[in-house]
Image (cartoon, rainbow, N blue to C red; front, side, top):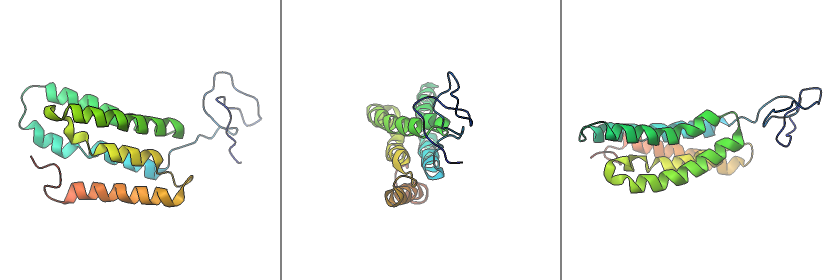
Length: 160
């Protein structure tokens, strides 16, 4: 069956609307996020972990750990919205914008490690090959290249 998008209310396979249902399609299928987008969002979450551990050796108390956890929750938010593509895109784009300002403002407190998560979140928002095949492949490839560079090049960005 072919999925037909509805305006805010999902319907049963017979066509009758279910009251209170949100964001579905005519046959009950959902508009899932593409695996490329989900993978880039996971990379955005994992990118600041090694530098955060290195920076944590120079801090005392739990303040840095709490700020890191709150910021990581902002980065992880799109991952919980993988079953609604529009919400995932919105959360990734807005979260990347907020994270850019937050990591710049918190760079003295060790939150600058999240700065390279910003382009990965933006790439995750728009790397859907079902809508734009060639730009999505370029975005996914550049995000993968950025993640590989952060992981393999010694001192690329996280050596303190």
